[in-house]
Image 1 (cartoon, rainbow, N blue to C red):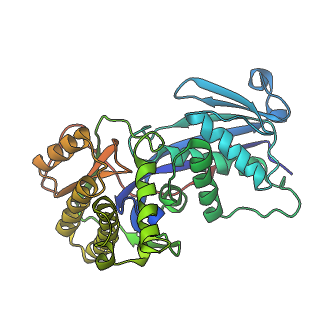
Image 2: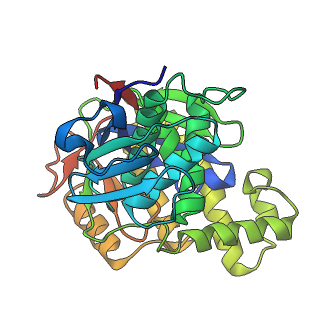
Length: 362
């Protein structure tokens, strides 16, 4: 039988290294953080008094508590929308397409991962919504439909990003949110979808993020354009993904596409080097890799901005062993690694690996 109430939490993430590699079947090394998004849902027949206001038998009333904004729509063929509403409508529609019989419901959304900071508040919203609504519909699947596992949930959320929000993202953010674990980064191979935990032992060193002050959004930035350029490079090379080529083959591409592909190949190598540095306890080497990643994102992939560059310089001037933009670029946050004897600048916030998405007591 469907549940009357449900609740779920999904974390944001920091991508330690491996940027713009997920949609190229490459490698990345993210970790989930403590901040995230919480969704609480009540079936319409479980709501009472003022809670039931505006509910219909086949509709959802959603409230974004932090924004003090609301949305209401029918579950059958919801109209397209924008902003946070697009995620709620998209997740609801895609779960229904997957065979879940969602009840009319009231949904409340709250969170503490900063929006537009490049820490994947969008994936945290998608994943927490999916988990809460799946739980609310537990036992209410259409005949013949199968319960979604975590990988299938990640793929559903990524489809919502593409088809409902308009951002051609890969699976990095959703997988990091769903599979995150305390004190561990995740080496994700996006060709095999193998996820390998890597202990994040920093021995007193600290990972810190600083918001550049420039809002980051995949759908309105050059993100989709970069993905299209990688597709074009693959077409010219006659391969299905850049994972299939080496540096020698990339040299024959036109200059712009060569730069894009060279970043992806180099970034895959940096992920493997970062895994080795963590396992070997070589934190200075990890710092150098962060800076090398940022230089490649700036010079070859061209996704940096003056605000990001100023933030990186400020962190390096303060003594960071390395710093780079984290997220897709075009704004958002900068990640930096500080040795134990170095004091970070004002506004820097320490981040550590935390647990992944989970159901909560309703």
